[in-house]
Structure formats: C-alpha cells, structure tokens
Amino acid sequence: MLEITNLSKKYKGFSLKDISFTLEKGYIMGFIGPNGAGKSTTIKLIMNLIKKDSGQINIFGLDHKKHELEIKQRIGFVYDENHFYEELTIHEMKEMIRPFYRKWDEGLFQQYVKEFRLPLKKRIKDLSKGMKMKFSLAVALSHHAELLIMDEPTSGLDPVVRSEILEVLQALLEDENKSIFFSTHITSDLEKIADYITFINNGEIIFSKTKDEVIEEYCLVKGSNELLTDHQLGDLIGLRKKAYGFEAMAVNKRQIRERFGNSVIIEKPSLEDIMVFSTRRGDNHVSSY
Ligand SMILES: Nc1ncnc2c1ncn2[C@@H]1O[C@H](COP(=O)(O)OP(=O)(O)OP(=O)(O)O)[C@@H](O)[C@H]1O
Image: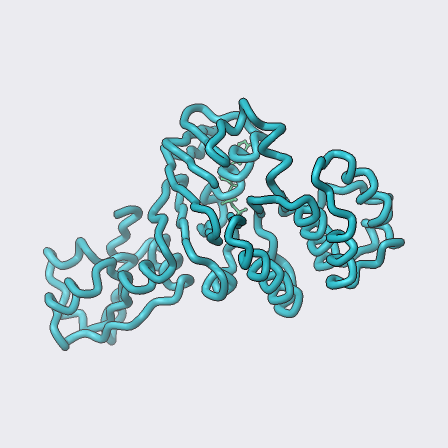
C-alpha cells in the first residue's frame, strides 16, 4: 500500500535521513515520535505537498508523483489543521469537495453525518475541534479510499471523541483491503488499535515493526548502581542513575536476563516508555541502535 525507500529531505537545521518503511494491505500503522521528529514532513512528502531531495515513495505500487491524481482518488487524507473554508457550512463545504472524487458515495457520507451527529447547517468556524475532525474524517471516508493517511488525527481531542474516532478506524479495517497510516504522539491510542509501529526520532527511523514485536523485545530494567560496569552500559537506553539505583530500557530482554540474572527487575514497557527512554538524554544516551 505504501512503500518508502531511502527518503531524504533537508531543511536548515533539520534533515530527514534516508528513511525507509513499508505498510501492507489490511493493517494500521502508527507513526510515532516526539515533537519535531519529522512526522509531518514525512506525511507531506508522501502527499507530494513538499519536494523530496531523494528517495522513492510508492503508493499502491505506483510512483507518488507520476500517478498523483490517480493515487489521490484512492487516498483519504486527514490533516492536523483545519483546511476547510471557515465561512461555509458543513453541507456547502461537502458539496464543494464532492465533485473531485469519482467514487464519492453520498449515502456513506450521510451515514457518517448521522453517526458523528454532524450539524450540516453549521458553519465550519463554529464547530468544536472534535466536530471539525469528525467532518474531516467523514469526508476522507466517503469516497471508498483504500489508504487513509492522517496527521495527528486525535491530538487535542477529549478521550470520548478520541475513542469514537478509533472505533471508526477499527471498523474500517474489517475490510481487509484497506490500510491506515497515522501519526500521533498519543501512544495509548496505538496500544489500542495499531498493528505496526514506526518510530522516528530526529529525522531517523529507529524501528518499524509489529506492535507485538516491539512490546515483546523491549524491556525496562531497574537495579542497583553497583551492577553497572562500563562494558554493560552500551546496551542500556536512556539510562538514569539515582541514589536508590538505575533505570533504563534495553532492546533484547533475553540478553539482559542472561547478563544480570535475577539481580535486576525487568518490566514490560508501554509505547510511551519506549518513546521517552529512546529520546531522553540519560546518563548514557543512545540515539539510535
Ligand atoms: N518549511 C520548513 N522550513 C524549515 N524547517 C522546517 C519546515 N517544516 C518543518 N521544518 C522543521 O523540520 C523539523 C521536523 O518538523 P515536523 O513538523 O516534520 O515534525 P513533527 O514530528 O511532525 O513534529 P510535531 O509532533 O511537533 O508536529 C522541525 O525541526 C521543523 O522546525
């Protein structure tokens, strides 16, 4: 569905460095990383809203630039900021967008209007943030898109609206021919629905794996400071030493158990732990591994 190979983009003070990952049909991939990591830049490159320096982006097996019009008929895109005409009502805005899509399904749009309780006669500027996002989603889902690409769709939304949106996304995946790629820093949303996690930090992909693999491989390690000898520091990510002991993350749970035996506590990390430990400047910071 989406194949990114050695993609690079340089800005003054930031570069996206040779990133690669693939999203297969029928799966949800969460794209996580701290502020400024390069998530929006990657999404804008995929959507051909900015120009890449090098690399290849294929969507549905087609070059994203050469086949842009055809690809965009088959994509639903939800952007993180409101990009509708604020003075128009929901109904008027929808009428404006509708003719662009060959496969626009008015019945389906009306179903989402009902499900999301969208007030058709209200102006976009008078909608709450959650309503704007639901309208955006309804538009993105009403032309039978095969791939849904979303930049921070749940940021700034309350837990009720977020979970409503996640449910709609999950229901969408019951059709095995669809895929979803979305960026977020709300990692708990991904714990609920993502199949794959791609983690970007400082313009580099740290990993792109199934969620289960990530949670299985990574571990949190806690123990007393005396256990830390120099040759053991290399594998510990985001290490923090405190008076009562150290805490760190490691990539290979089995290796840590073999090395430290039962003298350390090993815990399962959340995706948030993985993001925080990987990016923080600990006493032994490791930026990529
Ligand atoms: N047009 C631009 N010109 C120069 N620098 C830019 C431009 N757009 C983005 N950047 C820089 O690129 C870096 C990555 O930004 P990007 O918006 O991709 O991050 P992000 O992961 O989406 O962050 P956030 O979670 O805060 O939205 C930032 O340091 C940003 O300042």
